[in-house]
Length: 286
Image (cartoon, rainbow, N blue to C red; front, side, top):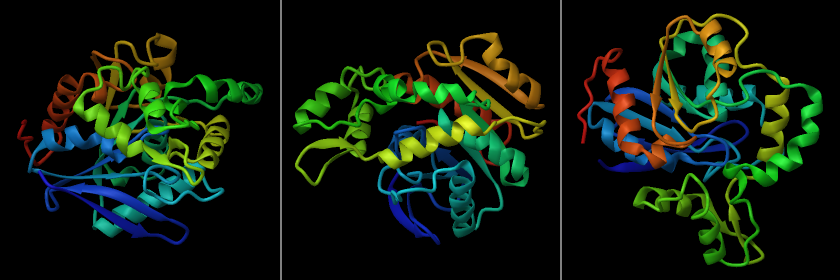
């Protein structure tokens, strides 16, 4: 399948997005914190020609604009509403990973008519966090695997070696290598680091602390993808999803927080199987 990159000019930013197979049934894929749209390349190819797949680089990430401020859930969702309007989509199957899993839950609460289904892949920060936890953010910035490509690194090779030690890139598969290359860039001073903006990191962490993702029941058919070595391993973590998502299906898959990178075949098949039950299209599995 041929993918194309486009740029949507919104009121405040330019939103870059990847697109596969225009004209099929609509699916919107949202990457997690520090990632970019390229992480969904293999899933898009797996779903085949029946699906129109769109994956944006969310604001502050990848090739999209990186403003100094404006990283609340409301502002990011407004970007996505603009994207759906540009595409002419009244609704879509919407998948969110990690932080964007929380975004998807908030969006589904606010605008359920936009969702044919929701797919939450090991979401994080779903509840409103106590204010004192903000003191731990500097530690999280240094320890979270999704942020360890921030740099700066003196050379590209140093960045590459760091990536190969991270759980999302450990196998250094062709897909993982493509994702790494899409997420890294040479800075103005000649050093290397992530395309993920520091302002985005700080703004998103501040927002997820103050905002709860689930506060009322949501009837949208929802798949929860629970990796065996992911973030959501305990029943207390799953309790909000069971409480508020009325039409919930939970599927455990192998792998860590990035099952689409480390166990992509099983993950992609899980998504395709779920979509078969709710789609007009039938996935042509590669």
